[in-house]
Image (cartoon, rainbow, N blue to C red; front, top):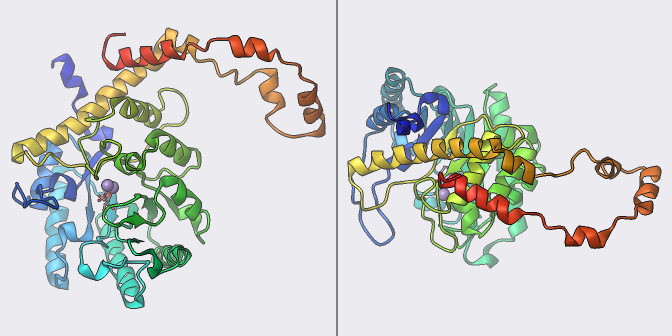
Length: 393
Ligand code: GCO
Ligand code: MN
Ligand code: MN
């Protein structure tokens, strides 16, 4: 084993890929597929060989739209056997509520109640499928829940309809006594001009308005927050702090571009480093224990070999960053530079209100000029981080 081999993934790392990710055929709005469709069972075998823990799927990644009940059962039983044979799990399932043209005005938010009813029915079936495959997390990505012609509906109505759908489906899960939680995935745009509930922060507030908010968390995605020009690390931190990080979609994305879904860590390594550090808890705080899911795909230039290179790359980069983050946080120079004065008398004084505390806060006479003059050495801190990332610390 070479030193580099220690970064190779194992199932204990809990890495997962969507069937639609490694299965992406390279089609884009301007060009036809550059790769053949890969059978879901082959995807499972190849990912297991590469060291992944599991796969996730939309209903129609496995069962074609409109398949009969007997066709469905046959496909599902073959797939289950393949999972067992390869020691792979399905921790997350979801519904495709975007490909069929009937969803052109949205699914849960569409103006036509028949479309909304069909979306519910399709989702209930997909939840059943997920449960049959052992999934405990169900993701909602409302790709078509948005608008171009905004006069078509009051955006408040769209939010109400979303709430109605989530409440309906939470009740469904409870009625069936399923052990399943929901994870809502925000995206600002693409394929709609504007998608409702565009960021993880919007989702977190929306969740607090649901009847069974304890069942519902978020599935933030690197690319989606970056498309909006926001800090993904801050979004994930807010979700973790709220106990709502139920799932995560890892990939890479340059700010200001179309939805790129690039290999994890292939752009903005610093954000990727800070993200892995946060998820792994090397800088303190609770570790994220859920699946590390990659929602990305290989460049359109790649053939079949390139697809598995891409998958290995996502997982190895995560593990390398995890190693670098641990080294960074164990570095005494770093520790001596980060002093957040958490236990000081003043910090205790301002932690909660009382008349007495308010009086003491008023009586404090801090030397603001001295505070203003003090350099914080964040240049040194950030440079140390860069040197750790580059293996030069
Ligand atoms: C996208 C989304 C999707 C969802 C997937 C699972 O930008 O297309 O990220 O890939 O994650 O539909 O819900
Ligand atoms: Mn995406
Ligand atoms: Mn996603």
